Image (cartoon, rainbow, N blue to C red):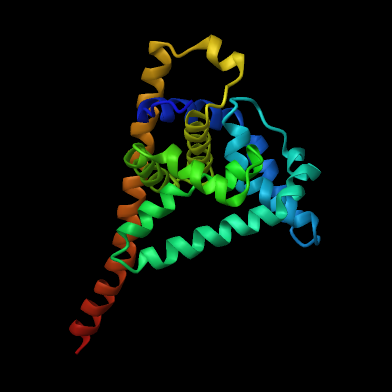
Length: 231
């Protein structure tokens, strides 16, 4: 049931599906923010936002109104329980030089999605997430790292990162994508465009990070130099 993960395929799917769902995801965020103050409803919409990669894993265009689906509120208890159990494991693990915490975070990352998507209990979902991520933690870790880097590109980077998580979940859970995506396939031209786009994202992110570092480190140094010269 579990498939192999390929970083290149994750990236291709993330770019294609991310741009296809760019506006719907923005719509989801806007609707979530506008209704976050409404008791009870806000629980369902928050669960929907947390498990958004499940909808993206199917390769279809999502609807922003889906976050109001009442079915999300049915898993309120298991949602809180599974997140509580995850935190009880992850936070103590972080105290042991951080690395064990990162491993535990990746191991149980998909348990919340499994609770909602597969209708499993919190304990079953955590067990399934642990089994699904076994042997794939490095790939998942590098995707999270890549998502962190491209997140410096406002909105677009976050959407691509989210779509990539959707692809990973779909592969590990055996989720079938829409026939539209599978029939079309990936041509050499698409791969070339995606590869070039990745390089643009990386270079832009590096330039942005360097600019931020220069600003926060350079400005104090200049002020210090000016103070020294004035003495």
